[in-house]
Image (cartoon, rainbow, N blue to C red):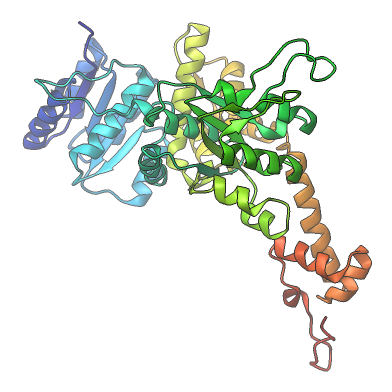
Amino acid sequence: MPSRAQILLVDDDLGLLRLLAMRLNAAGYSVETAESGEKALAYLAASQPQLVVTDLRMDGIDGMALYNAIHERHPALPVIILTAHGTIPDAVEAIKRGVFGYLTKPFDSKGLLKAVEQALHVAGAPRPMPAGDAEPPDDAWRSEIISQSAVMEDLLQQARLVADSEASVLIQSESGTGKELLARAIHKASRRCGEPFVAMNCSAIPETLLESELFGHVKGAFTGAMQTYKGLFQAAHKGTLFLDEIGDMTLTFQAKLLRVLQEKEVRPVGSSETIPIDVRVISATHRDLDAAVAAGEFRQDLYYRLNVVTLVLPPLAKRPEDIPLLVAHFLVEISERGGREPKSFSPEAMELLISAPWPGNVRQLQNVVEQTCALSTTPVIPASLVRKALHNQPPQVLSFAEKRDQFEREYLTQLLRMTAGNVSRAARLAQRNRTEFYKLLRRYHLEPKAFRTTTPSGQRPPSS
């Protein structure tokens, strides 16, 4: 029989202490209790649980003092703080100093159990075994997504609802946020979970190979086609196909993809026969597809076919409370790969990680954690290494489409400034007709009137 996760509860309110112990025992955890910070430290000197849940305001050693003592002796041991005196500054300070979670009383059992489960997952503890005939909550579908933020919880609830349907899903987010993880979670929660999940980044495949990669080809279809290849649509038959960076497809290929989605069949390159397919498509992009449709760069009919439900995955900067959780997860992964005890970050280092802008999102955070972990000669990673890693991060490499969009936006802005918002003059300078120029302005949400200046006499210059 597998062992049960060990939790140490610390609170000077004996009634609440007993209530919390009953709730966690009923959820399948093994619970020890301590009525003070001093007794908690005495217990920790002889035994180490997988998680400590402590009240903040206590006589003698309070919750933060207890956390500091635990962090010094057991830097990888997660701590959740409970308080009836919660304020936003308290929560921010606690998270900056490395506290895993922060719950304000009164809290419901569901919120507590969710925080406990997340902390134990990061710590690598065994899953709870509910007492009696109770069934554990089935959150396996989202197990790869590390988060405790409200904005992500709301997104995951939406994802769980849409997973039960066959609707096509469009995930919009910046690069490095974990679009594929979300798509995989939707697949796991769907009726197709026992079938294949196949992922492809559309921007990583040259257009000349895209048709063959997705639809397949027969032997001899083109130079180098030494054998028949099924293609990813056939590979995902009965399952889910995830198409990342869908906005980078050319109009020509968009038409071919639309036909496949409408007809539910593919024709491999070089073949005269079609093959029926049953695939749910989840797509993702960093681009504004509404603007791309308005500019004539993305087919409206394909957009409606893919965008039945839109899920917006927030950037890491919008959910800083997830950073300590993600950092702890990466540290455990690194320690398991190297077969060593996990390292931790000093409070000052954690503060730097939480306050950083993270233009590269979770992918960049993982890079910084791995870099500082490799360079640190001590178990506790200092702020100086984090500061250096953040400073030395290579600039975010943009895709061709992102760089083109950036150039066009800056170029159009410069033209409007030079001509004080006169579209006719700006179009002539760009050697484009007015209709095409207006399309470009609409694509980038640029308003000519915002660039019009007032002459010394108080009259506006002639408008376009």
